[in-house]
Image 1 (cartoon, rainbow, N blue to C red):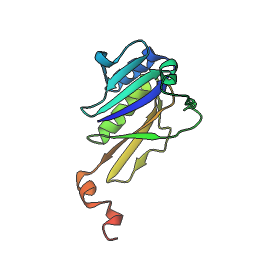
Image 2: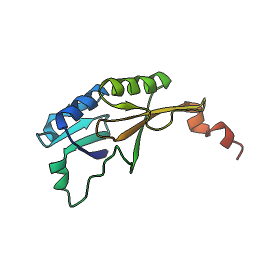
Image 3: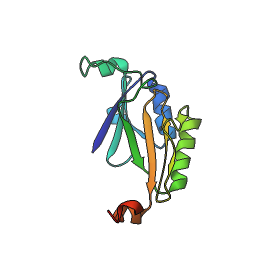
Length: 140
């Protein structure tokens, strides 16, 4: 299982955003300082208020709108799913394509930035290319 912990400035806004892109709030692990958003059977996003974040240690919160430490990337079923999730994120208050869109034929990707600046990349890869490696790498 993977738990991604993200500091957020407005917990209710962030919960609404992650619900709009397919997350489901798990009330067992949510309160007024944190929300557990289930993205899949194995991926959970813990949205933490700044006060809750501070309980994990003296670790400053960077402004994710001004820099990035990580790009989170999820696979999608097909190219339409990639475009659909970026559209949902944009309608819910996110920003589309903070990183360049990519279309290599065998692989397609786009990204969005959540309201707190965290970047989520979304990628589809042709299953055969995933098994064989990219066309230009097969001969290598």
